[in-house]
Length: 411
Image 1: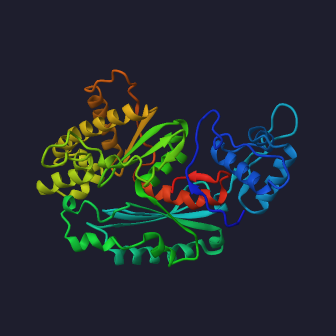
Image 2: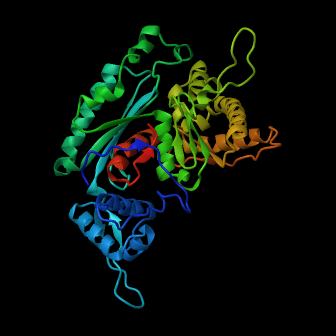
Image 3: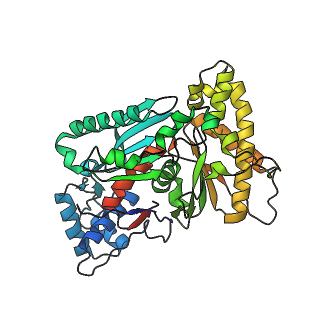
């Protein structure tokens, strides 16, 4: 399966008839590599199944599937499970992905932390490294990335040739919103002239992909979460700054400048004569909760863990929840007017208990808006959580090498 194919980042999804959930192969000559990817995608999305079921699902002949499975077994990309005996006929042998068949690395560089994950072929995390900071220093961040890459190379040992690439997720403007973060100009400007992908590419011969952090998080939800069953949705991710992604007809839609779904910049009111209205990120970001904790003499890092719902943090969290929920509800209402959304997926880099509280309060705030002329979409909790950005980054090279669709993710 090794080749020079690099996919562009968009992916299709629908439970009934969208191609990536019902991969269809071709029995024409010269389609062998594409058909291998179709079979792999079918097993990835639908789980273990025998060759006969794979043939029916992919529209390939039983003979073609048998030949493909034999090649994939030789390449170590799939393996056989124990035979399943039915009432009649020969026992069927389910085929599954081999977790050691391939690996990819996902790196999230955020405003409060850096995460580096090693994912195996079934999407499980094998290695993890995290670094927390008040603001990322480039020398420290890239120094740690290089150190951890070397560590992973050693850990993989003989499996190192199966490492297919690195995907990076980071904000497009790491030094942006300097005043909100109370940063000195020189501190914020450190990232202005840094090409993150090129800096990491200089450390390795592996292909390196880059995606906006919230777009990468949306990719993770689209591929491995609720996005597999919803064709049109707004994705909202609450982090230091709130952001999001937009999925239309099961494609992650980027827009002209890659900013589609950038909900953090949504205005929360009418413009005045002297200054623009506040943006969503000014009311609904975890940065605001950090500030409330700091002003009360409490640890701001509690905004990202379970302490946020316990005394003495809980009172401040309740105030943040009220403001954040109302602001997010306004954004959902406005987005629905434009996009006729099938649903909204809300996730973040915080405790799952806080996500449940936020979901409940957003639902309450949505009830305060008029929905005349439009249909109120359901708001669902995301399934990936704080690892969404790094996992989405890791999916970029993994799917580029092994998925059939050349138009997988959004660049």
